[in-house]
Length: 433
Image 1: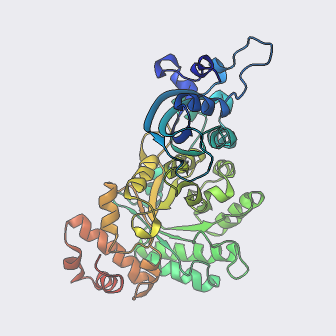
Image 2 (image 1 turned 60 degrees about the vertical axis):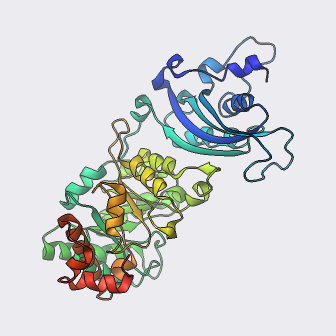
Image 3 (image 1 turned 45 degrees about the horizontal axis):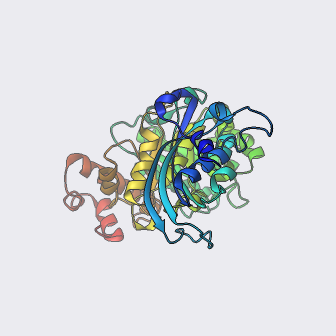
């Protein structure tokens, strides 16, 4: 590619019509001249060959991705971070680049969007084998073509009549399920103790030992009993993750029998399937995060998890469960906060999704999550912290609510536990962190 050809893949933002472009932030490592490598990168993910032999046409102004910012972070490195190209004939540069990609190339179709910005042209561009998509920014004109969440944070709060506090989930354990009678009793006890939402684990499918229909029927009945006894609305969150062709049928069977929200493992099922389900459903949709870590875990390669958070919101999820704080989830505090912000920050006219950072939480970790997020607009999702509590799920749920009461009143947890036996038992069982 000649220097003149390269220039066709560069622009300044004020030269472009903002509503016509999605902005993409990448980290990349390239050999040779960074500017030429970035021009190839833009070409490969948009026009590739931008004119026919013997023709004076130029497809770049209409269809070409353009680099609008390029920062070289480091030059003349001896090799790539991950050794993906052992034969390096020129020094390696590490760069951050912002690319404006015309969304006319793929339209309001998530599979086509991903094929462009995370596809062959992006990850197989000549001389740039190390690439990570760090962020994605959608213009209002593009977002207007997606309905997004049907309920969002406020709609979920209205359904639960739960305001000015986190939403309290509980993952019914064991995660792979029990016979429906025993499973539903655990959910019932959790609701009585103060859970807003009792949920299936992401691993629990429509199994022969815990079939979805019977599980939804019994948990629906248990939910209504708990609502009558506590005087507060409750949600049973049923996992309908399955083959795409089964989603609508599983939705209808679960909702008809008492599930009033549905869990879908977003990436294994696919975001287009979620868009389809969003159009069909009249209950909130909740995303879980299997299959995201393999794309996002490596610091300098893959896709940052906040991109997935934005895409799940775009597809129509009302709630996004994500890896939370603490060493078990291998996710930095900054990344968790970025993912939560992607759910809540303005995004055209799309409603915000409720972020639910989770992983080995209990009454003792609630303050940490609240403090690190700096908002009450989040879900708190213990598993064993409720269902492994010494006093059972009712006591475990009560310990979570008592921990929140202490936080809201500004009382140290240990002081509040002196008069609340469930919280005291949680402290004894789960430590003093």
